[in-house]
Length: 249
Image (cartoon, rainbow, N blue to C red):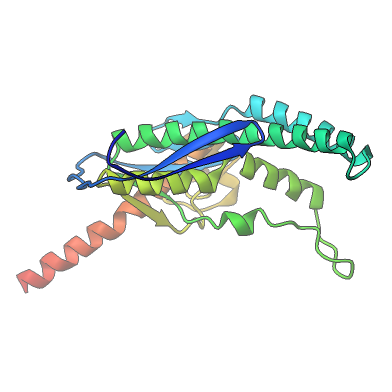
């Protein structure tokens, strides 16, 4: 085990015992000259890279566990609170949710480790996932609209673990001497990467992007990832140009 062990925490989770070690490691981040990449996060694919690669969490396994969790919750609702049968049903529901969380965490760890090994700068959208997954049911005086559809979207976003992916990616890039750049998400999915035309009609479906102006066609998420990469690398070019101009003056 690397570094100096500061403390050890032993905890009992719904699916077993867990031992975690907190280690202090002296580390100097190396100079990172790996290429840049843009990443678009979605619900059909967890991530789409600007180089055309697509990857996703094991959605089928997670949805199977979600269905099991819902059935267990229904059983739990029929049990008498405080009884032994209630306690067993509660533990069963917690174990299913914990297993799904572990699958999601494992995928995010592997995906971010692979990205950091290949790229030095990663550009992503600056998304406020806590606001995006807020309930739309509203209040009794002002009920919300499309509540069921919004609940389904919230469940899909949480299923892919967008915030966890970003958190893992940020600290791993920092340790590797890389950089995480967050860009404004506005119009990244509506803009043509080839001609710059912005129109919601360009995105014909969840997967297909077809520009009406220049005829460019691509996977919609990949097109968005390329726009994100361009937005994430443009400021550095502009700053460099300004500095050279001032020196020349």
